[in-house]
Length: 282
Ligand code: PAF
Image (tube, rainbow, N blue to C red; front, top):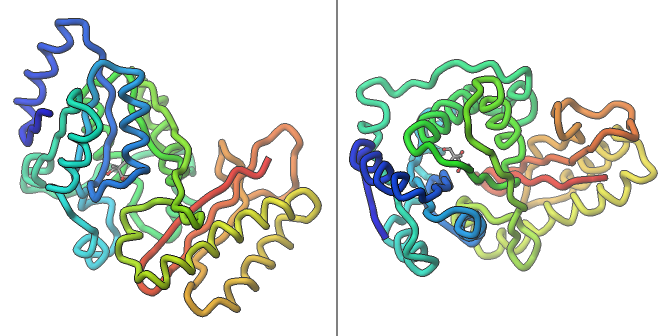
């Protein structure tokens, strides 16, 4: 496994690989790797000769300083996990300085309103930060394909939009959510939950599953109200939002249209840990 922290060195390594006609996949991460990340890496390894895994906790996508500071970091363990998967992995772990120099700022983007709802409403500037870093990693690595988890479904759609609107020659691949045995969506943030709360957090996925059942017969309004009432009775978790939205436009569903695909999206605080999840409804 090769590890680089400088863009220049990574670039000259990848140039040589491309000269040998080797294809390159990219899996961008913020580290604290878990099985969800590893499943992205494994998919990428089946479709490319080499896979670059970037590990970088991107400061410009955090709207709260506290959240950035508490974001779990475990580089040694990340390296060991990746080594156990394959020797065809290249890790890119740049410093903040290498990426941003002395101007830690994001660029402004137009995402056609995809960034104005749900996560965008509650995390100001978040998607400009994501756009900035993902565009930079895509251009640095120049992969044929880049892989993102569907747990951050809104992020995935926004990255697709960015690549399409800027005509960037990379394929964006969405991969299914990996779940813990109790249904909780895998996330680096789960490490910050107590054992008890981590168990109780199965409530999030169970609520989504019931919402899916209700979707067959009830209105989006009724389902939203039902979810709110469920969380009002839950002492471990506080609901930030629950939305049923169109998969492509991410606009909230008002009236069901048979030719559209819908998803339920949820954000919850479990103590001070913010968790998100989503589930396809039809
Ligand atoms: O999903 C994430 O972990 C991050 O938002 C990403 C895509 C690595 C960009 O920092």
